[in-house]
Length: 116
Length: 111
Image 1: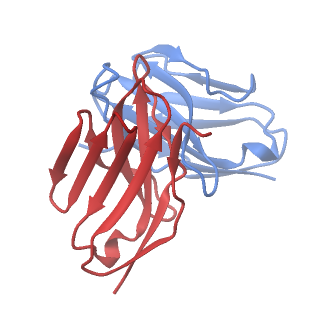
Image 2 (image 1 turned 30 degrees about the vertical axis):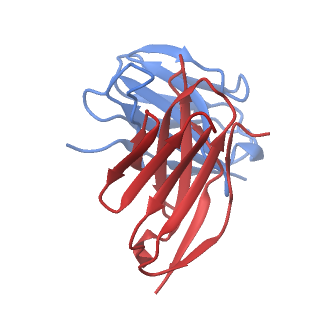
């Protein structure tokens, strides 16, 4: 009955390094979302999966950002050649349904990424 | 104009009072509305969701939606110091799945 889990909780990367952030959604949740939250701001949408299909990646800020969910469960967000502006909290959320109307999303604890 | 607007606050209320948090949205195609609470250093926690015009009550919380005015609010009755947090308003547009958030309103409940 665990909630959404994310790892690592904290990541410090040197500029130019690649990072991979993991999200384990609530068991049975079909939809999975990645958001980026800068200090003092609301979360901003990055990308959305329904099962293993990536239905929307319009929020990914550049082609350095890549996400996958190959078996429709765990998802990984990868950031290549990290830049200082990538420093933020990366939040993963999952929801049970596929309907955009009944779509209560539950968030994981987030990964705080700091790029030096 | 941002799609979801909230007064950033801080909103300060005494313990036991009613806290009123407001949110406006610009896209008339928005169809689902959510309030999340976020404590400092923590992730957002879902408090309420509302889909239809009118009021929806859950314990001390009441969400109000007025689609004609493109306005959604959250009332917290008998506010407690533990309610001190940032409250995020979010919407989902018709045909989309992702949440669109406001910047949040910081609430402080003074004992």
